[in-house]
Image (cartoon, rainbow, N blue to C red; front, side, top):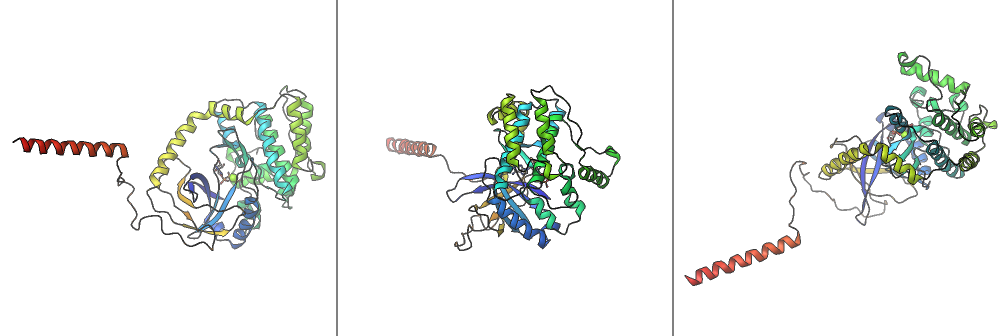
Length: 398
Ligand SMILES: Nc1ncnc2c1ncn2[C@@H]1O[C@H](COP(=O)(O)OP(=O)(O)OP(=O)(O)O)[C@@H](O)[C@H]1O
Ligand SMILES: [Mg+2]
């Protein structure tokens, strides 16, 4: 639904931190039903505060474009991690797989207590930071899609493989749909492959592949999990089967109930892991790529600091205080010229700030004038003074 950008948010104290900005595709941004639904969902999501949930900061508009600003998680998403593991033949330890699902369940249990259903639990919405944090993002955005006038095929893009049967039939999902989708995550992490796969492979068109996935999701025929020789594996497979029951009534009634069983299994089987260890493992295996991506981003951020920002008009006010947003940089490395935004004033009653950027935009290539550091300036002054004395003495002696 969106392009993703990296931006710098500055607080009134002058501190800066990175935020991720999602730009909603123009077709959806023009759909009033979608915008209204997104505003109400973003408001709910902004009220969620949990270590395993990506914090939503703001929803805003600029020149008709719609943006969601959220906490930036430096790392990779679960889909990307699984891809890299397969490509580089790195095995993801079972303890880390269980940690990922346990953290996702903690996030869901909290959101469910607050009355929020995610509706789109899938590997690309599980973000993994290089510090070892595991965070679920995009709460409720799927609901905004459901409220839009977009064709069903667009709404279901890429999601069918993680849908509960009732969701695939178009019925309104409840917390047990999130349990089902988390069951698919666990199944795939334990099996090391996708749970639903289409038979036609690469020869199928995107639409046909999606229809086939949807049909698989409606039927909910769960393939058996391969045995991996884990301690008390029957119990673990039992947890997966209960999460993936076709009828919602036979499933875990909540994420909290599934969490209790999975955490108990991990402890009993001695398969627990800390985020600290997970972060170290991520850095050991994928750290080199992280460093080059970070350097490219920092170069792009520095380049964009010289450009003029624009204005974001808030269309929904989250519960949390809003922060001004600085120039945007696309997450792709080394693309220095992206749209730039600055958030609107913190509250409508606040006086307008004087423009913080020069009237004529400074050229990106023009070097900045820099003042000498104080110590160097003092030395220069002393040298000039001695030179003057020497000249005076020289002239006096002649
Ligand atoms: N807050 C964030 N911080 C860092 N990276 C993010 C953040 N949000 C999203 N991303 C990255 O951007 C990618 C694209 O996100 P986006 O939500 O647009 O697509 P998606 O997750 O594949 O689809 P959808 O959320 O609609 O199911 C994510 O997979 C993730 O790698
Ligand atoms: Mg997403």
